[in-house]
Amino acid sequence: MLDRLLSNSRPTKTPVINKIVEKLSLKNTWQLFVILLTCMIALVFLGPYIYLLLTSLKPSAEAVSSPPTLWPSKFSLENYFAMFKQLPIGNYFLNSLITAIISMVLSVFIGSLAAYGFSRFSSRVSNIFLLITLAIRMVPMISIAIPMYMIINDMGLVDTKLALILVYTSINVPFAIWMMIGFFDGISKELDEAARIDGCSRLGAFLRIILPVSLPGLATTAIFTFMLAWNDFLFALLLTSTNTKTATVGISQFLTAYNLDLGPMTAAAITFSLPVMLFSLLVQRYIVSGMTLGAVKE
Image (tube, rainbow, N blue to C red):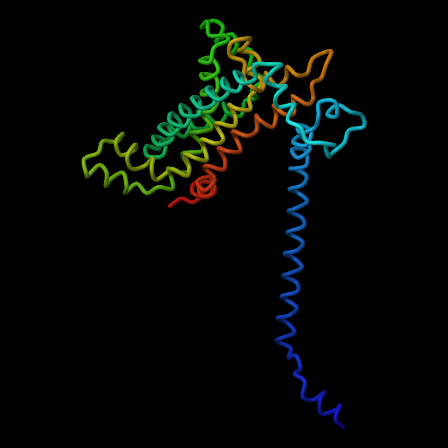
């Protein structure tokens, strides 16, 4: 009798509560699946970089041991010291940094000016020109490498930083135009009109009003143009020989027909990846907002 009374006094789950519990369990299961899937994808992409980092911290003899090991027997920085002793890697990194930064600034500025003009003075001719710039950007770089070398050679600029800056800028400008035109289309033309009423010229309105508003777009475009110039190997190999070798060409010199200095090579590769990572972290908040700003038009 007492058991029956106790069982009757216990709260029973209504159908509504059962549905809520079921939905919560399904939601938690789906979230767990998404988290596991994200971790697996991240591991696929981060795995090689983690292995590269661990290899750079191994002693030089262990870095080329067979079979290879994942975890170093002891952590060592000798590969980082060796890369500076074997090659003038510091000069290579400086050349890459100078050419990448200058070409990035020129590409973003020229591309922004052109994109602003296309956005505010749209016409059939400008649309045709936009399609031409897109077609130029779709051309494989290997197909224009030899003509580009011949032009630079005729100008007498082979093995100079100016040659790399001109090439990277010419390649990045079409990309910058297509990136920035979406951001400018999302900015109301009333801002231009208000600036003109206040006495600004068209260029003044662009520099003082439109550019600060489109800062997320500028940051997004800047990081992509910087990465293209920083990671380039083809044109750096063709247009440089001794004075202006970049880091990508310098790192490849650790691999020869007779030897492979894997330890210093991995150390140089890790060092080479740091500027892009630091730059991305500095402009991260602008990139996140910039990736969606140009997708919405008024």
